[in-house]
Length: 365
Image (cartoon, rainbow, N blue to C red; front, side, top):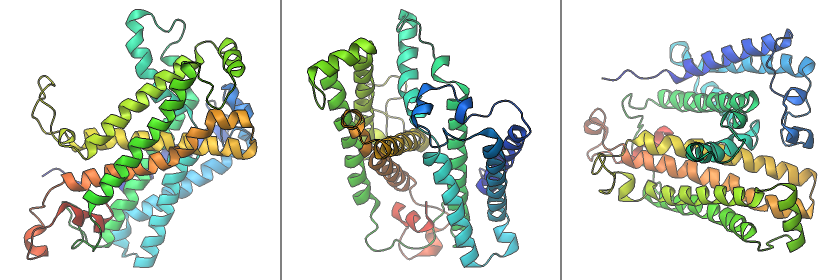
């Protein structure tokens, strides 16, 4: 039997390591990724929520927060042995979810999403020497890689909270279920609704980018479109490329509710007819969900601080991205719930009927 992963312990280890890194920054060490140390010109325009901090004051606070998060994760890891009361356990889980949201979607800005969109395009164009003068490394400087590390920590804390909740509720150690399905919690129903929302939002975004690439002044005047194209050559076609990738993602999202999302179609060589690994669908969906949510929150913050009409036209579609991210995460959860199947460990003893995949919802999975 495959050994279970101790997610709270991994989250505690991540937070401890990050706390030590922050202490290194506090002592004057190199690599502080925020504020003036971030070379991206957009930081001075308020694109990063931590763009205005100074290392001398921010690094000690970050170190304390990371070590506090390590304590929370450590208590989650030791919860079963310490017999933590239910209310205290729920409070620890809430704290872990707070850390997960902060690391996963609040602190990061739009650059992880840009990297996700640009790097595949650059890799595809590299054999042809396009685009000239732009490298993959230029899309992944240390501040962007650092945001990826933060997002990974956010995932670990989310998994730690879920694992502790399953243990606290006495869920099956194999599948995570904790009883029968609650009325009205049909994963097929809410999964379909979430997929349609998650697939629809990128279509709105792509429509605006295609319109601008074709010279259609949607939200801008024709003169503004020409001026911006002259100031930043290729901006509209670059946007159209990202819009195209959004449409590809929209189509792939339907795989979360279609048969070809569970078995590879026949036209795919070597893989045809094989079962699609659950993680192959869920992991990319979660990564994209986090990236679009963090980017959408950043654009919302920018527009709130400076409600310029031109910015609204440019960034307006991104205000829907947190909805996109939330719907995609829900769709991925529904897909995973449906694909897990019946559990041989708990099904015979838990009920007179076999468990359904939706029973896992009660385990918080």
